[in-house]
Length: 262
Image 1 (spheres, one colour):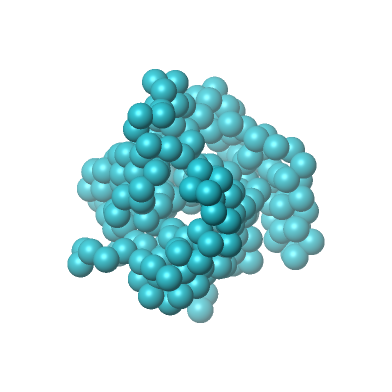
Image 2 (cartoon, rainbow, N blue to C red):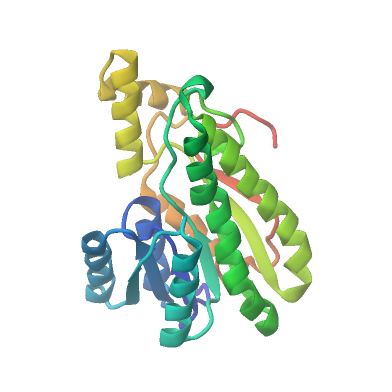
């Protein structure tokens, strides 16, 4: 299936590892020119080299999306190199885990900058070009925790749900301009972030990471963790011409973990 992504300019934030990396690889394989950002140069260079070695086109920019100045510089760098961004994938690392009583005001401020403000600033930077060209794709990576809260993830549950509210409202405002806005909710997927989370929960619960992962798998109807490439396949489709009539949706990639009807 030709997704019509050749020569499209895609920006994937937090694209050097985990789900962001998988999405960047998938978009590049479909012919898009993919810009990724991350805070660490080494991991960024490694992923860019992997894409280029596979015959794709990629560029990397060191940036912290929780810093508004970095967001502006990031989008400007991409525009100077390749032109306006056609596809924006907002993604970031997760905030601190913990119950309400252990979280400080600084934790809340940092999580809001990392998850919500970064999304607002990224969209603000690319949306005028998308509306001007009457074509654009905005994909916001949140979490199943935004739909069905996970115990111990107070910050993630709260702020990722806010991103979903932003995306759902924005979708209506820009639909007539040919810009789609969708939210992707990954479930428990085999990434570095999930491995770290299992270790943290094991430490606080007096158990092992393997036992924590086993509990997750027991809750998933498919009885396994997801793979990053399975998530990336949906992202590539939603970014494509084929998905031009799909907008304002929040779609879980979770092996059936969410129990709700809608």
